Image (cartoon, rainbow, N blue to C red; front, side, top):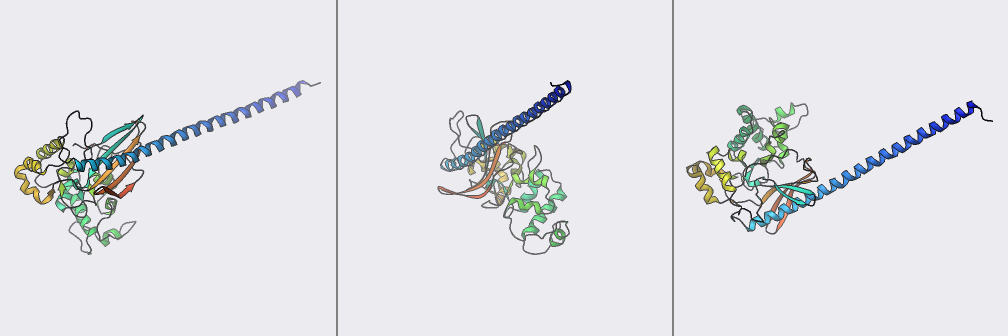
Length: 323
């Protein structure tokens, strides 16, 4: 007969077996839940990426449409309106997903290779850079580009860069991307990318402009205020004017700036360019940044080419500019 001791051992074995089974069941349950969440996140990420890609293609179509409707007034309540090209976010949706797209005309930005120093310094001051620090950045930027080893008053050449812990030499040639600006003396990561709620240089500079002049019909407020002769009142009037038309009307803007046109004339142009930056973010939830893509697109008649394409792109620092 089975004695009490044997019964106790059998009970312990059964309890240990049950405990082991419970651990196995919980482990499988946990793994299944993790796999379900991972799969869901993967599907949502893929959907957001496809929405962002759709946003890029939609923007290209909008730019082409804009080219065909230059100067057409925007009617309140109109079912279809031309998208702005001054960085204003445009939104479209598909079922429960949305896509935010902003288009920025490169002619409304400061070209690192062509724009005069006075505008570059003005932009830096508008972004809160101190006057002496702005002088260092402007002179160092020019020293970075020029082919010689002569150091400008506030600039930097080989001696400065080779003294850094991670030493290197200046390029002595034009910028090929705006990210190269991070290598220039005085340009910090915070200044270039901006901080929460504050835009950075990356939002206002380009290497794709077709001239070194500023297009008043596309420039954001920070760039407008960098143009010699511009005042806050004139900038506000230009921004207000742009709300009523789909494209820059040079004659009307000249009427707005009036006598200030003489001071601004050497630094401004009119009309859209053929190169645009497009940023698109596909979102499944409005509380999350979603999946972002950034592209620089140039149009040539009915064709277009990508000058720059980055996927994914960080969209968390979007700041909606005034139109």
